[in-house]
Image 1 (tube, rainbow, N blue to C red):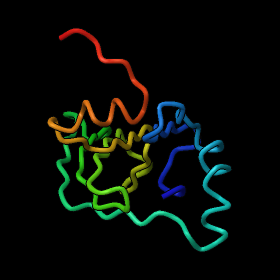
Image 2: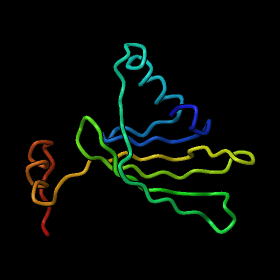
Image 3: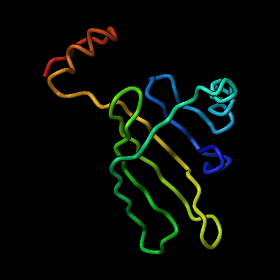
Amino acid sequence: FFDALMDDAIYIGTDKAEHWTKAEFLGFAAPYFARGKAWDFNAVERHVFYDPNQQVAYWDEVLDTWMGPCRGTAVVMRDGVNGWKIAHYTLSMTVPNDKVEEVMKATGEKTKER
């Protein structure tokens, strides 16, 4: 995954504090990979879209993860003739609509007027 990131890529994780540069994210994740216990996410659905010049693409995906289903979105840029590099990636946990208030209570978020 890290090899697929541009040097100036941004990774946004599921925690609201997770807004990482490639170097920061690699520094955070390296100990997990060193222990042999890292993340194993598998795409079960993906939709890819391209700009008219086929130099930029973006996708949204549903992932099977240890957290349950998650969503990923990415912006990728062509890197050479056949290569692509990820410029921006966001990982989000999915929350069923009928569980949102429960999650908000668990995280201490205040409910706003609808």
